[in-house]
Length: 157
Image 1: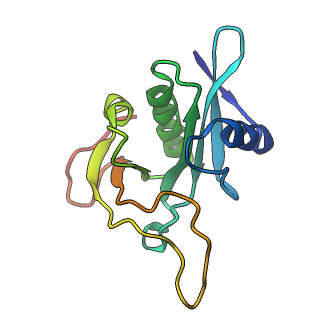
Image 2: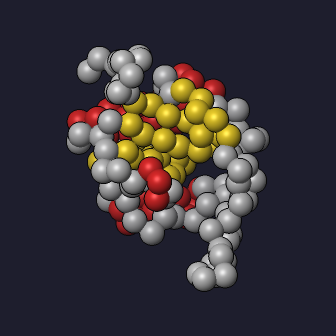
């Protein structure tokens, strides 16, 4: 398996066809494809600025889609590549979220840390109604970072 660049159009078409519970996102910062030995697409990861405004500090990114054909180790491969690329672009941390039914094994294998549980819910509010078509359950938040201001764990390049 190898990493390859992928156009937004191709990545979003792959997500539309293969993702279990999400449509393609509206935009992104970058995306990475995983291909097999025959150069066939076996997965994509899409990284964007965080959806939560409180995390939009200019040095934080978020994996907003991870979609594979189910082949072994593709998820952890793409999660590792997403972090490497984000770090190379100057990001200091990256987040992603999983549903309760998703165990997080690929995230742990890629060295991500569990960062707590969200309350869940939708984006719709009276001042800006939206149609929520994604799962509204509480989600597990995962994080990878270079280090923090308190001198805790630091990651080498």
